[in-house]
Length: 345
Length: 52
Image (tube, rainbow over the protein chains, first blue to last red):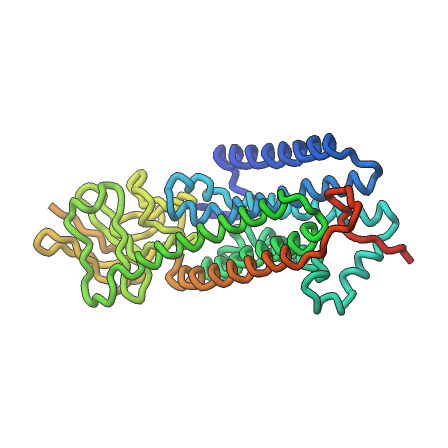
């Protein structure tokens, strides 16, 4: 949350997160270099550059695999929410490693005084009609351009400018970039390298990410269908079924989910979508009297869905009532910031 | 995530998984046999042509 522009809102958690990331990347690339050098020492400069191309390429692939795994893992197990918190910095670092991979490729051509050959490879148009022999570097270049676009628009300024809905759809481009990277390696390196390690890495990485997304999607589908075609007030359950300083999430038919929170004797309902990135508010907690998003810590008052001053975000709220000891919520949304919480005995 | 975003996810991932898995398997299946006497496990990044 911020009331003014800051390039990056650093805090201790982000510094630790980024420090671990940078250290892990440096360690991986250095380790890859040392091991590969010992197994097969480069005989000349192009072979040496080739070694670092492979180090940065595999590193970028593994980073993308981890980044794409964090989302569904956090949906399946709350312990992974800590990784989600600063995922955008992870993504920007992955772009930088991929850009280094590309820069090394250019260096590889330059070292042999053969840079025009890259242009010739990319513009040999008949090859685009082949499967084996497809200009695989074009796939890598397309993935790099997508990663650049995502890194360039990762800042909260673009999130606010584009709106969370458009921004999230734009950043789903990462899925396409990941598929392009897999095919870039499958149609490039894998065609010449007969060792099994790279195919295993590709299959395990992509298979794991795809399986996680499919499982998480299947679970979400079940949750969306929980209420079915119910109309009118929706049943939440007995008051005791709502954890104190926590929430129960109700799926409104054809609408967005509703988070019904309890803070002692106060019960209130807000949309389950955080105003920042549409994070699942109902999976958060009430901290310091405010609903706190589990993704990035954005806060809202339970009484009216407004962020505490000086912040200005407002949430859609819903009316609440208790009938025969059962809490019910009206699925019709009230204007953002409308007081709707009630006190119960 | 919005309901529409979740729905899109559920459509995109099965398609992406199918397309990439098929492409990957075909790339392995159709790759040319190794050249006889090839000793270098990891080749250069691309076949070179003489620069103009």
